[in-house]
Image (cartoon, rainbow over all chains, first blue to last red):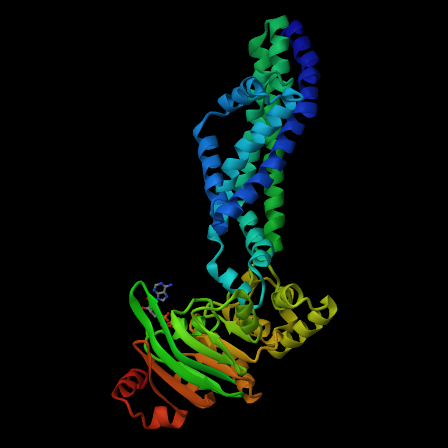
Length: 224
Length: 244
Ligand SMILES: Nc1ncnc2c1ncn2[C@@H]1O[C@H](COP(=O)(O)OP(=O)(O)OP(=O)(O)O)[C@@H](O)[C@H]1O
Ligand SMILES: [Mg+2]
């Protein structure tokens, strides 16, 4: 690599990494956290067969899974203001869209995991006098979340990368910044490779974390 | 103590219980025997409202319940007095042996934690599982899991315990340890209804035996009578399959 390229590489590294740490990661974590809450509630409602709300939840999952994430972002950021729904910042809009999007997918993961908990666990709970809610919160949900954990982590890793789509609604995350730098340096090969490396770095950290937490979770129920 | 009258249950138009009636007195050890599919499990499940009944009356401690129309409150009232031991143990998989026993006490009964732990340890001691109180179900053998399940049932001070084939999921060499625990409970005059295919065991511990076939109680009587001198042809036929 010649000296000029090397210099561009080094200079842009921190310029890309900083929005990575300050925007991409917070956006991912915040949206994922909200997604988990949404997913748990939606999965719970559908599992427990709560009338009417259940249908609303199914509708929500249907819409989200049936439309592209990029379209959802554009719809929310450029479309909704026409209906009078405005956003404080593109960041907030992105958090909401990513949370709703991941929430729909993860709700299906969690619902499947809830269904995989043997019926006998619930019956045993009834027999020792617990209420449905107590059984769900203390017995079924912990087991389901443990079973769903690898798939949920998959969703998290996917989301880190998908946040690059937020560049399209002017969120100044890593990819947005990289594109800006490309317009001044004209080195797309180098810079897109560089940002790809940083995404890979982030995902790898999460993968490692997944392995570690999975071990912990298994130890918690006495499995090797 | 308990009186069941005309209990009926149909699954998909298939009558499974066709009018079951019997009494249980305090201290009774009642065994229910009968061929596979005769409705034994369904009977126990109906008694504990895990399966809703179509028809029937339950008199429990002098109070009468319409089994087809019970409120949540009534179901809780009855479940508080009963315990259930499942064929496949159904221990809470995310709880240790000790937690399995304390869960109902602390969460459902709001018992003080210290008292609940003490009680749970006592019960685990009784079934010989105290040394393994911190193990998870996945770290216990079937026999050990079933003994913990019995401790969990006992901790709730039930007036009656229902056992649904407590040993039929176990390897032969593990059956003895579980039967021994149940035998000890019988010696303590605990009221129990036991569904079992362990004929020697049933014969030696029961105060009364119900023989079920095709959703009805075909014959009922003392172990001596049922095993020694059964009146009904169907009972004789059934018992023959167990004699070798
Ligand atoms: N939830 C259910 N839905 C439909 N049919 C059922 C259900 N539960 C039980 N049955 C049917 O009811 C009949 C009696 O079942 P039950 O489990 O009570 O028999 P059992 O006497 O306990 O037999 P086993 O000795 O094999 O345990 C069977 O034919 C079974 O197929
Ligand atoms: Mg059965």
